[in-house]
Length: 95
Image 1 (tube, rainbow, N blue to C red):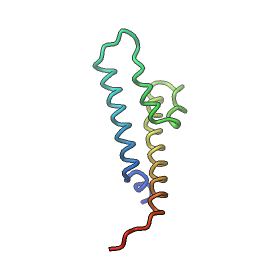
Image 2 (spheres, helix red, strand yellow):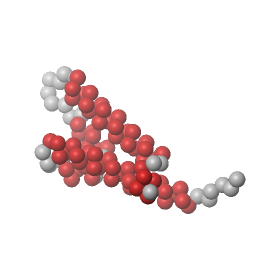
Image 3 (cartoon, rainbow, N blue to C red):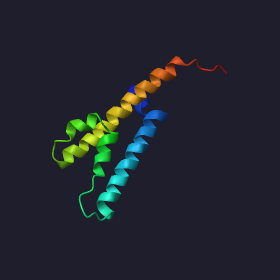
Image 4 (cartoon, one colour):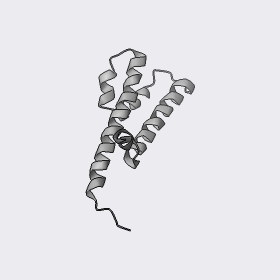
């Protein structure tokens, strides 16, 4: 149950939405936008999931993108733990 609580909070979900939006933008830029030179849009996917994703950057293409997924999940779990820690310190209102 603690694993799902790490991801089911506003901070983690907001972060994962931002990551999904950036990865979607990278996909659209890669597939549909003509560039005279190479596009550096994919760098943003690694930046928003850093530092964990940066460990995968030197691997081949598909494994490097696995780093984006791993980085997003690790960062969301850390944000979830921080949210639970901060939220646990507030007094809960009694009904």
